[in-house]
Amino acid sequence: MMKTITEINEKLKNGEAVILNAEEMIDLVEKEGIKKAAQKVDVVTTGTFGPMCSSGIYINIGHSKPRIKLSAGECFLNDVPAYTGYAAVDISLGATALPPDDPRNKYHPGRFIYGGGHVIEEFVKGKDIKLVAKGYGTDCYPRKKLETFINIKDVNEAVLFNIRNCYQNYNCGVNLSDKTIYTYMGVLKPNLGNATYCSAGQLSPLLKDPYYRTIGIGTKIFLGGGVGFIAWQGTQHNPTVKRKHNGIPQAPAGTIAVIGDLKQMSHKWLRGTSMLGYGVTLTIGIGIPIPVLDEEIAKFTAIKDTEIFTQVVDYSKNYPEVLAGSLGEVNYAQLKSGEIELQGKTGLVKVPTASLSSYYKAVEIANILKEWLKEGRFLLTEPVEKLPGSETELTCKLLKERILTE
Amino acid sequence: MTSKKIVLKFPKQLGDKPVIYKLVKDYNLEFNILKAVIMPDEEGLLVMELKGTADNYKNGIKYLESLGILIQPLSKDVTRDEEKCTHCGACVTICPTFAFIVDKKSTPARKIVFDDKKCIACELCIPACPLQAMELHF
Image (cartoon, each protein chain N blue to C red):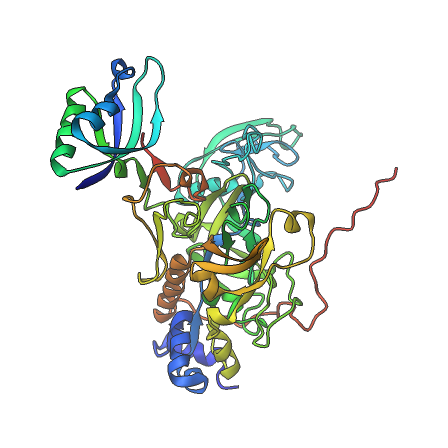
């Protein structure tokens, strides 16, 4: 082992560490080779800024006078339903929650103008949020109704807690049917009219440490403009998917659950997002520093878009019906070129590509993290536990449906 | 030659007059109507591309203005809220006239540029933008 995290942290404290973002690391390795780059560079920063649906917040609003027990009652934040099945005044709100009177897809495609993700963005921004809630009344919590504004600066705790973020690779979505479809991969035009993808590719955190050697439980990260931590592997964590010889998964693989103090975060990096005909979600900024401990990690951090492959999936039939089959494998350089070639009904067709994840902002996140590290106010953490890796037998399973019997 | 995309707002009493016909006949202008909304007894709206020699174009516009029609460039009618845009790029393949361009040379790379000169106000980007950054001002 060439370096330890403790040694790198010493350098960070003294302002002597060499920190590059993943783009710069790719350039350096191309110019000087892995060996030299591994010696020279201490930390590589990564970033991603895309819609991540399994996100949410929890808050403790403080006790009212007289007290109310919100649990098992109704609770709305700006008319968006929040979950209160905890103790008296703890509330959680998911990014995809919708107001009861939202028309959904009654008039397809629905617009999904406002939902949980938008409440989160406004709450972080410091706007007053309308809370309307009911309790059933108990001897110790007599109140039955609460209507008030809440503000992030007044609540006890406000925590972002996302159970699945930062996918290690993701599908490229297309539509083989003859009508437009509206999906979480955006608007997909008929007959391979376009292809969408959602990963920062060569800048995306988990693609730069494909075997989770340095990224693990307890890792300190850039989260929504503030500091957060990896709490656990994310739901649907699927480390055992097929990988290329360079270690990069060829399909959606690892995920992380992340947590952090919402009060430190910024609405700039937590954005309510409306997917036409699909629903509301939250676009989140995440950046993870990767300590360059040895040549292997240096090599991983320098993996380029041309070496990261994903599958092209039909969202008109294969995805909804859970049918196996990829229309082809493409790399991120091809996706970013603006056009990919796919096999259509009458031969090869050129399909224009669009991204749902902002590469422009992902670079900005990697650069902010770089600044934090340079200033010595953000130090690296040793994971307290490894994420389950490709050596495990962990796979993401489908639901086993069973017939209900009395 | 002058060629511009413009938005005309008709006062309600003009709805039944052959205004565009006059532009062709008297001013020799070429037109391409991109959108028209005319409701009985209400203000009408017409989005079109108008093309002709500089003189004819100027006089044609003068004629329209003399009828009380309000004229403004189309670029003012579909705008992007720069605060809201995250430069994700979801709009790129939605726009039929390729008004959204991925700038590979920007710093950082891949900023999404909105070229309003290419916009024909079809409005497809308005609901398709996940960040609700595209705005219509008709």
